[in-house]
Image: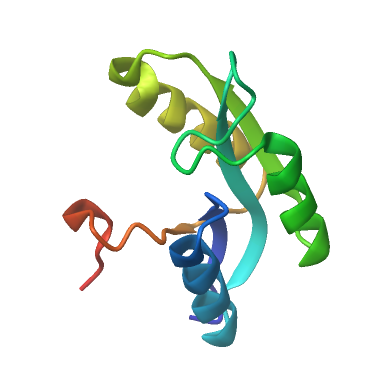
Length: 110
């Protein structure tokens, strides 16, 4: 995993934190954390944490946070997510992603 350069999905919750930590321990180079907040509330989309708290968490662990705002339509979330990932991936040498979404089958690796 030494050649892995990753973007780490960050919700501010324990699963994303643990996934980030385990990736680091396995030698993955994490370029930045990626978080999505609501344009309306400025809170994280999944745990409802204030966007400023998410910035503070990233600062405490010494990682840059790429925080993107998304609209309320969950149907558009996937395209907004892909757009954000591609934007970051194009500006850095990212070849993988870290997720803490342990309940989502499509995020599991074999």
